[in-house]
Length: 72
Image (cartoon, rainbow, N blue to C red):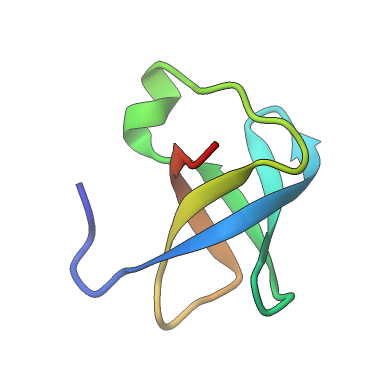
């Protein structure tokens, strides 16, 4: 479920930091720390470097976002 006022944007996974913590790069080159949303924590998807995902980010803090789904 989406938060009120959140922005959904496509991003490419470029690096894995720790288990279930990723670095995603937006189309404009900005890098964001990405983590699984609460629904995906129960049944996580398999992510690889180079795959595209949908991120939910706050318009006030663009440094981190929640992974909602995989595009590939």
